[in-house]
Amino acid sequence: MTDAEPTCRPRISIGIVAWNEADAIGATLTSLFRQSLFEELSRREWSCEIFCLANGCTDRTPVIAAEIFTAQANSHSFKHTFRCKALDLQERGKLNAWNLFVHKLSAREAGVLFLMDGDILIRHPRTLWNMYTTLDSETEANVVIDQPLKDIALKPRKSLNEWISLATSKMTQTGTAQLTGQLYGIRSEVARNIYLPRDLTACEDGFIKSIVCTDFLTKSSSPRRIVQAKEASHIFEAYTSIFDIFKNQKRQMIGQTIVHLLLDDYLKCLPLTKRLRMAETLKELEASDPLWLKRLIGEHTRRTLRFWRLFPNALTFRFQRLAMLRGLEKATYLPVAGVGFFVTLIACWMAWRFLKPGYTNYWPDTRSQKLNQADVGPADRGNATLVESVVQQ
Image (cartoon, rainbow, N blue to C red):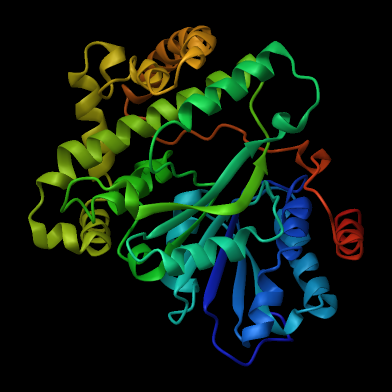
């Protein structure tokens, strides 16, 4: 940790997961240290802790994060409210970093854990504080989210590809209890009963969402377990090239297949006592048989003779989302649903071919090289200049 540490134990723990984000991590941390969270903590004599979990990086991500943390610990107006540390983890993967943060690094006293990616911009200055207070006031909720915004949404003129991308997002947001792994807060006692299996690979947010909304697969799904905070948003770099879109959709199809297999076919059938101790159950499975999930995936894909049946509703979910739109919106977005259908069809085939030989580790390059060009709104220019000077060294 940095030398200047708060004297009180942290109420909030923030984990930033980053892989080869040297181009984006500076902008991400700039947006983080602009947050009103630190002023609010100071008023209450509370504190938080911040970890940057750079995993398997081959660039300067952990070095840049460490330098920025040191600079902020020395100059931030509310430096007495936080302590921060950058870790250079040798093992690559968001799942390992998530487990390490939740189960080993985060303070036991922290009531809320924030997870965020190292390539987003927190847009609204009160985002984190509004998320925290929303979760604190909504007793039924265990997870709080903000509003994710694609960077292209801020452009005055949009290409056809960009319009389709934004329209697809609008259709996705028609569903209830949406959870994006880019930024969310979760009650610590809930997070610590979740363990992400090594071969979950992608769509960990879908796994967490299902676990949380069903109270660890013991009840019917309740969307009230996830609440969205007002005046809270973040920006992320959208996929707009055909190549990147198909890579991302392939990852999504792989992830949804594994989540379906885990939740619908395997974990739901375990005894109640094991489901209530979900983290312990999954840790024991992985310790006794490291290949257990890979084996389940292999058996599932061998049984799945038609690639479009990797998981239920693989080819219809976009039209189900379209049906939730109102009036003329349905006609407007029908072509988007049609394009999405064909993209999903091809992505399912790609995922099926990838999983069939027994592969699970799919690592598409998701670096956000243009994120620092996005406008996050009014800025503390002194703070921004401080971070920029570190990144440019």
